[in-house]
Length: 349
Image (cartoon, rainbow, N blue to C red; front, side, top):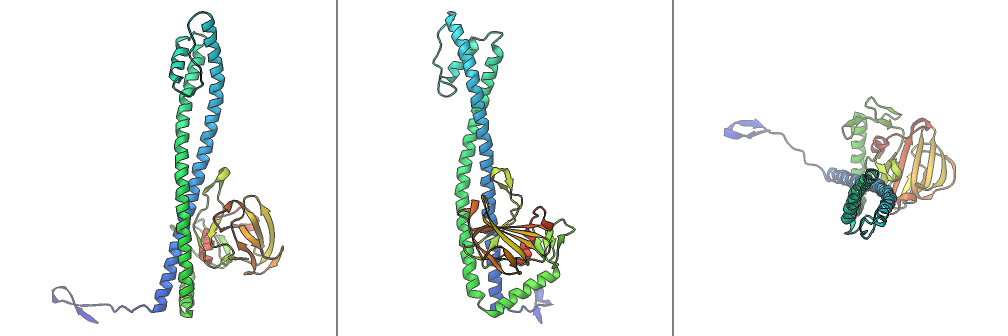
């Protein structure tokens, strides 16, 4: 095909094949999934920021309490000095009201004026503690303000994530009804799997159908299927700070309460209740790996042998996940410590 270009020069032009309605529908689904995942990542980032601020606030609050205890002890010593000085006829004693209030500077000046060679060290320490305490109280107030703002931002992030999940649900319900759309999505995923082109940030990884560490250091469990059946969104939150000084050791997968959770591989599943995880399930895979599911709303059945894809429970917000229904999912290679499961879940879901 030839067209006339700049200056009347004939140049070849490429014919553009119009995309079919089914292809456009598949595009819409993939774009909606990416938006939902981005919103989920923003939500988890907001949670991590709040947890970090709360940890810092707790540490500062403890420092303030320690300084207050030290200041009170020093204040008693300084007051005794002032009383002895007063009893010797050196003058009156101003009202002592601790470290707070408008009399603080007057107290300090008065105490310094009474200093002797033996009391100067105590008075200097008292002054240093008072100054440090004032700084720490100011820092604590700023942290409390930042924490309050982080709570507001977290609620906004939750709303955005819920909205994106709902949009994804609507788009999939409308467009996935078309068999051609499902075939296109399946073909695209198969092509991506065959090419090994899955991306997590700057890390390229490949789904092999087996499990192990890649040369990049990324762990990929290519033997699993997606643990959540239905509309879900997730982000990479490995290592994010959590309350109590913990670090996140899984991937959080958002979704509405009640979504089916399935065995990602065949194996033996057991159910327990934990303080943080709430209703939890542990799957000892026949492949030698352990898989952990947290925050379930309910179990399906009892401890038993399961096949890959068998329903073992339902997504919820038990434990410390109240208000944010999601699955906390872990992969523990060779029954050992957890590894970042994001790459594996991205390839499977």
